[in-house]
Amino acid sequence: MKKDIHPKLVACAVTCSCGNTFEIESAKDEMRIDICNECHPFFTGSERMVDTAGRIEKFNQRYAKK
Image (cartoon, rainbow, N blue to C red; front, side, top):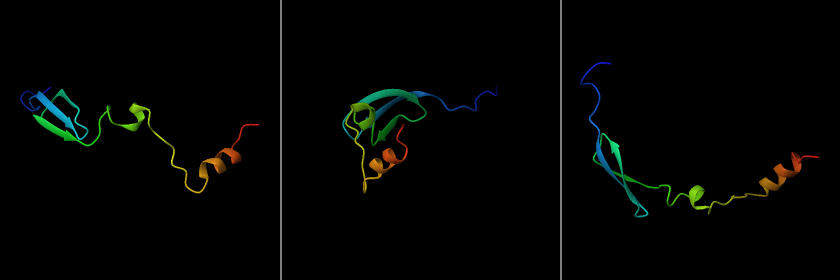
């Protein structure tokens, strides 16, 4: 590998819009993000299926296992 071409890693303070903060190593010293694992619906268990015009039921009827 070539020397002195990679960015220096520093401690990076990450702040989410929900208020959660944590530290990682990055080339930047500060990051602000919109969503993290504390507020994402997949990780919190509050995800929901948005059904428009009964598409989920139509899919289940069409491809129902017999």
